[in-house]
Amino acid sequence: MFDERDSIIFPILSDNEKGAKKLESTCDECQIPIFFDKKKKVVKELNQEVIITKLGRMPAIIIVDKKGIIRYAYFGESMSDIPENQVLLDVLDELDD
Image (cartoon, rainbow, N blue to C red):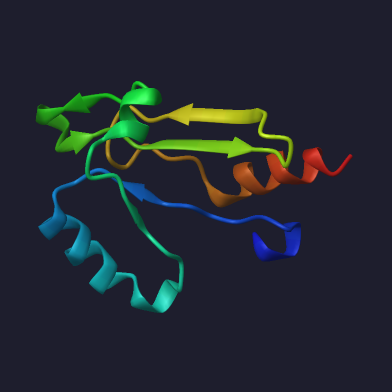
């Protein structure tokens, strides 16, 4: 899906190291490198919220084009609040136009 659109996925985790290792062990089959933001630099730059009552840091999805311009940004309001893959694929398809 994403490969066909010349896209690369970069998951960035700002959890503690134990949480990062746990996630990596469950994602062996997905073959996507998970980047660990130990100093929380990226999430601070993105102003990504932490809501303890909603189980932690809220998800964010950012699509950046090859020129480094943000073309899509989505900041979730709960851990399960993420757009469907088709929404992201449609954004990527529009970039090719």
